[in-house]
Image 1 (cartoon, rainbow over the protein chains, first blue to last red):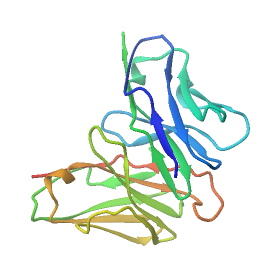
Image 2: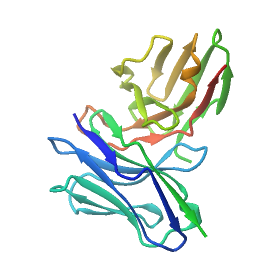
Image 3: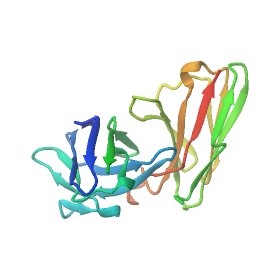
Length: 111
Length: 117
């Protein structure tokens, strides 16, 4: 079985500052990894995914994540955030047919 | 626009009512999912349908009854719910699970906010 741990439940950050959201997973087999974003009153939207290949993955809205197999991590980063990045972010690991989600990290961007 | 629609967006029901949530995907996917999202809790997978057959049922109470008449539509029938069932119910779809194909990511609808009084 695999599980996902998001190490920060809330991350306040100032506009134009960088942000990193931490995600660790536990699995004994190869996994596929995802980051989703949920804006208020909306469903989840895929930010980026890692299936194989390059460990640095670029997604939408300027986000990127790095897969680190030895540390079983998949941290999400953005070099400069905007007010519109205020949302909840979920890390997920896939083992067909399921996605297992972390508890989420709430990012609040302040001017 | 994610290609997955859910109706209604908001629902208030009493504990003795019967109602249904509807999900429709316009992406040509062959698997659909129901999730429950409660405040302060991780997303809970409720049901998985692949090629219109239920392949996962995560110990969900029988007061929740799913139905998948075809690969584009998914329903969640609700009856005699409890106040603790109040939550955001999310539908998702994907291509290829269990078939060794596809890109594995799931596409979500906007959810139905359910309040049980």
